[in-house]
Image (tube, rainbow, N blue to C red; front, side, top):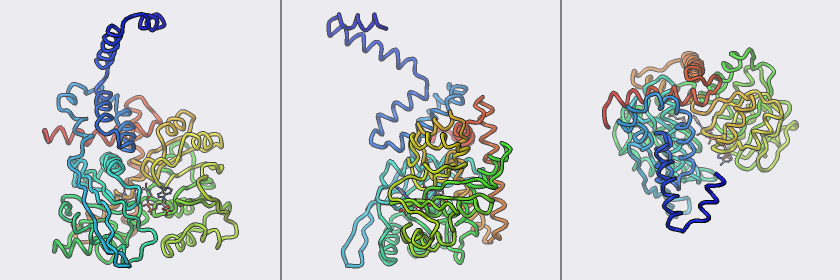
Length: 474
Ligand code: NDP
Ligand code: 2IT
């Protein structure tokens, strides 16, 4: 190598360029199918870092499966088709605020892949929303939905609208305008949106009302609906509860239980609240929650009833929780991962658990990190945890309980029946236990025992790939 560099210094510019071109061509020839697809994807989507991060994580861990089937997948351009959404919609959402001022937001829906069922995935309402974030979420959703074992494809949508600080009337005005456009592209057998950050029962209600009004059709076009108009019992709890069911199974398979464990949780929204509730029902103590401005450390254990009152009823900041709870400390900024724990459950947003946080968790003896949010852990932090003996289950598997229960809501809507809480909850438990064993088995089949990230990507991919190949070029 040294002599090569020395040689390059001592030749003319034209020879140097030819040599470099030759080296680059040879490097490209050596590339595998995965690298080729990733290179093209990076060139084409350079302004979408979250999407590239999600695609890289998936494709990288699929290498053994791709290598084993390279000739067929290449000929069928399977990976190129997998990383390109079926279609994406971007639209204007004008609405009138309480002062009579017209506001304009941007709406999105990405229909990524419907090989195994109608597009399914939430709607995110947050100022940070852009096409790259919706694409990353839609891409993840393909594999997550496949892992549930239920017939649902992958999609995602949302808007840069911020429901925070808006009156109910303003939220309704936005939701009605958003659905006026979105209703052209969705339907109970076509594409079924649901909640995500910023979209809860209130927003789903307004959107359902507008869909019904414009399309004249009373159908299960959204999930996460209220219980009086087609919603499913246990859907509100499902993501958080499901996260704990899979965490419990992980511990059980390593000879441990949740009883007596100290848990740190980030976020204080839908997923975080019901993860806290179920963890405490299982005998663990949850000592932190957070929101976008600060975090709470409550060594006596989070008071879930108070948290629900502050977040679900008053829609207030965590300062109100701390003010009402003598044992709680409030801190500005971020910091939950510095608290010593046995289990960490990131439940807020993407890229909220960084390499330094991973180091701190491992140094503090944390045994397991399971993701309630979508892609909360950066790639380098994930790698660090995996290489330092921390069991790690990524969001695709760990938070699949929400969308799985959405699919159960679709089933109930189709048969025009409602199941009991216990019936839905026991199906959810079974689904999460099955997911754990499927991802564990997939990792073992490819010689990567304990790598639940690879296991989830492989198990999710296999079903979608088979369906895509069976359906021909489309
Ligand atoms: P909510 O809107 O109910 O709660 C989001 C929570 O995360 C809030 O505490 C919020 O704080 C915090 N948060 C959001 N954005 C940021 C940010 N940029 N920085 C710091 N904190 C932030 O959403 P959900 O609980 O439904 O969703 C949480 C995560 O779980 C998301 O990644 C979502 O995609 C994922 N998920 C949700 C499912 C569901 O069924 N709802 C299913 C599967 C995954 P604040 O209130 O201050 O904004
Ligand atoms: O990320 C997710 O899986 C969700 N936000 C739930 C999607 C759904 O359709 O229930």
